[in-house]
Length: 131
Image (cartoon, rainbow, N blue to C red; front, top):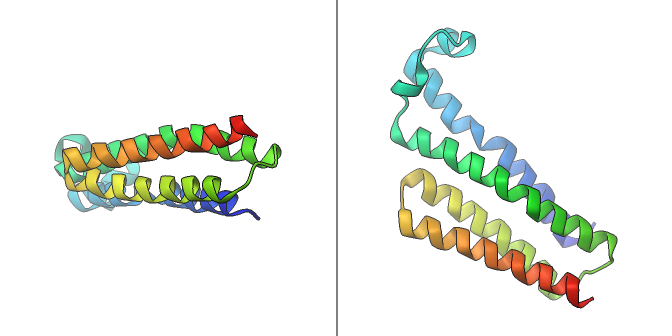
């Protein structure tokens, strides 16, 4: 397995775990049974960090689709080099930092992390187009 595919797997794994903090917050705020049966209005009772965690999760899902396509196209086209590896790793770590800063409510840091991930994807795409 290439480094890029491995990074994609790790990113998918991270993304599918991102819902846990905000669901846990809902259970803590309204109780297990009301949370599981949707009988409580957990939206108004959610702490701000949990709202941001949910938004960060949505953002991660939105960014996972194009990154996945880039990695799969590169793999199918047999485009694999040090720059694609570095771009994939950079994208992963920028997404980790983005999630953390989003949940913590750090606006400019979150934006810089998002932009870093975007630039990493542009470098990756450039490598595919050069091949």
